Length: 154
Image 1 (tube, rainbow, N blue to C red):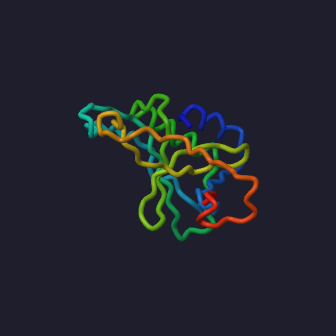
Image 2 (image 1 turned 120 degrees about the vertical axis):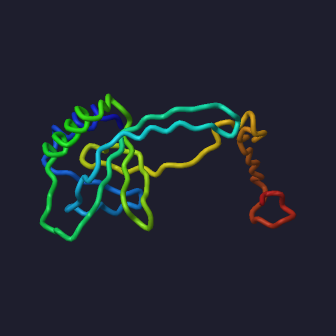
């Protein structure tokens, strides 16, 4: 989700709910402690120089259980960061503390913001010799009523 889509969605909400990939919720008394821009310049394992820019939102929960961040206040915080940092309409990544700081993508399901798990990947599979995944063909032998090693079904 990019900044403009996030702000547009916020403007339609009365309350904020963030859901982790596990299905558990970010505590409703969370704070938005940072809105920033992450610029990453790196060389992948195939030797290609790559550049990424993302907006970074950091969510944090403290012991102030009565705190509730309203959608309009989040828009104001984002607009301050846009003015100070020149964010543009970047894709958003969200940081949230669990066992360690987790980095998540962001989606909206019509009522809640979903923190989506992110994955690592090789960006130069063609140069690393990693074969492309092949579809698995499963042959079902309908005459076999049970699966034994000699049946060929498993």
